Length: 72
Image (cartoon, rainbow, N blue to C red; front, top):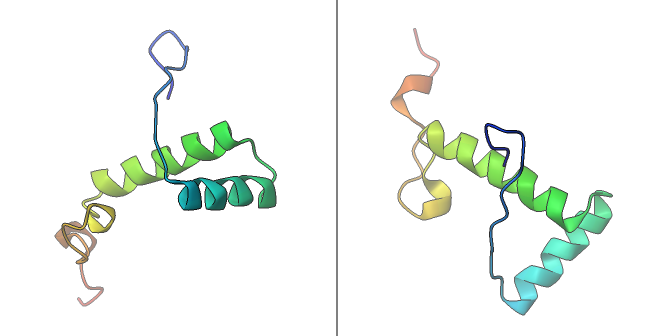
């Protein structure tokens, strides 16, 4: 994340061994550093939450009403 001054703030995330291994494999597979992968995943997750997608929080799987069903 970037602050108003352009500096990034660090955060701590704790993963169990199995998830950490999966995380490192994905970072290597996609040729990004673990730190860059974490930043991208957090940004994507925040974007989803801001759109109302609460699936990752276990709070709902429905699409937000603002996206509509596609019917006119």
